[in-house]
Length: 105
Image (cartoon, rainbow, N blue to C red; front, side, top):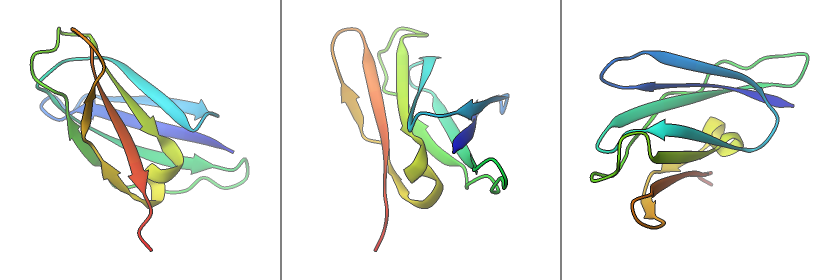
């Protein structure tokens, strides 16, 4: 099982694609503060590749140094769940939004 990830800055819509991710967590690094991003995920089981999920959006916190923000995406829940984009401040000047998903029952 692996995942493909597409992410982009909402303003520019320049999309970056990362393929063959085997881990359930993936860090988007080098993000800028006060910027809206979105991502979507596709699952590949080696035989069948799913459609991409819907785009999930998040905004990085203000005050971060450009390129200093990292967003961690939980890939398996991004396909089926809702996304909580509450930022977690992990120190100065690093601001790290942790993006996690929850499955509705």
